[in-house]
Structure formats: structure tokens, C-alpha cells
Image (cartoon, rainbow over all chains, first blue to last red; front, side, top):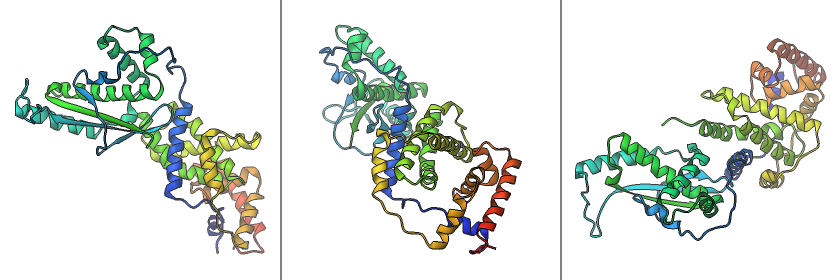
Length: 200
Length: 168
């Protein structure tokens, strides 16, 4: 037997590879990303105000939803939790299920829906800059919150994973709206439903 | 949609993690240490993301192994470190057995381990981790001609050490 073969075959054994190990390695990649992240943008935990902002995503045609939906797009919180986000687009309908015409024709609505679904199908959540998304989220809250709370109050209400979830949801739908507008569609022609789950 | 640098980096890290783990497993007696050094390699890689070579998977793998080689070098020069980051992986590695080796295999491996430091790592990278001589030289930050000389010397030493065993 030649030296090359002998050397190659003498490689020390490594742990048998398994799906469990692969999963742990994936988790390690996610954890290392979090550990290596600069801390300068972490939000301060200030005194929480009773702002009642949980449902504010309903403003602007975006509603939170719960329940099991298909095609969850994975993402990782800054604290390393594994989460999934689901954004779906549907034609606007009234309580009886009939299409709401609004400013768009039925044909325009369908074209908008098709464009929205295509965009959502290629959405890369981990490419979103979290600090920038948080900044957009707080700017949005400052514009729309009842009573115009100051920035410190808003930052106190949204910290940690809660901030991650809300800012990412907001950023995803904002980008969808921007994409549709750039394509010449009316973002208001469709209804967007967004849901998130973590730690499953 | 264009892939972001972080997404491409994350993908490269995921696809190389297994090889990096094997790299440490083959060089360290303790699997705990292998898990720790893999975690350290990932941390250092994230912190150097600005230097990550985009668009070339082969270069990306080599770049990550270069960081791993530095981490291993630092490990040899310092005390062991344990971090919460790698606790779970450590536990997994320490509870999974590996098969025993044949006596001949052990003899060859011992001969590799007894090589000079500068020679040993070249042989390991080429024969155990699957890199070419040029790639191994880059990972070890060696001039290719220097690497060639060391590799030839390492092979001579191995032939001599194994003359009574099996190689020709």
C-alpha cells in the first residue's frame, strides 16, 4: 500500500455525523452570530409605559395573526432564539367574502397579489439589518402612537425578543409595500397577514 | 434577490462547520476542546466578516480553515477555555463513542504525530482534511515552495519511520 493511501486511511476517526449533530452545528452558527454582534445598539431597558401598542401593527393594513400557517421563514433573534415568520397576502374581502374593489380593478388586484406573493417567496429575513429595522419601527411608532409617547417610553415598551419580532414584522411588510409601489401596484389593494412564532 | 453578505457568510459557515469540527477532532485529544475551538473559530470569523471572500466557496472554506488554524495555534499556547456557547455541543461529543483503530493505523498516526511541528500540520491538512499542498500552504501562511520542501521532508521522515511496517 502506498504512503498516500496509508496516510489518508490513518486519519483519526471523528464523531459519526448525524442529523442531531448537524442541528447543533446550525445552532452554534446562530449563537456565534449573536455572541459576535456589537453591543452598542442594544436597547436600554427603561421603565415600561402602559402604551397599549401590541395591536398597533393593525394600522396600515397589517394585522397580527396566530395559528399554524405554511411556509414559515426561519430567522434568529439577537438573543439566539430560533423563530419563524409567516407573511401572506390575500385579496381584500368584506365580511361576506366578496372582493372589495377599492381603488383597484379586480385585474389590478390580482396582478398586485401575484407580485406580492412572488416577493414574499424570495424574502430573506436574515438579510435585514436588525438595528435599522428597529429604528424604522420606532420612527413608525412615534408617528402613529396615540398620545405621542417619547422615544424613551417606546424603547422601554419594546426590548429584547419583543423588539426583534415587531421590528422584523414591520420591516418585512414595509419592504413589501415598497416593492409593490416600485412595481406600479397599489399596496392597499391587498391585505397582508403576518405571524411570528419563536422557540418551537 | 441578491444574497446579503451576512447570509452568504452564514451559509459558508454552516457548510464548513462539519469540516471544521473534524479538523479540531483530529488534532485534539478532548472533544470538549474541539467544541470550544469550533465555537471560538465561529466567533472570530463573525468578527472578521469584513474580510470574508464573497462569491467563491473554495476560498471561503480556506479562509475559515485559516482562522481555525490560528485558533488552534492560540489554543496550544494557552489554557483551555470553556464557554457556555459550546456546552451543548461538548455534551453531545462526549457521549458519542467512536470505533477503535487497527494497530497498523495507530502506528501510522503515531508516526504523523511524531513529525516536526512544521511538517505535521502540512501532512494533516493534505491527508486528513483534503486540502491541496498550495491550499495547505495558504492556511499555514507559508510560501508554496517552503511548503513543498517541508512536505517532501515530512514524507521522507514518514517513509523512514514506517519502513518496517507497511509502506513502500
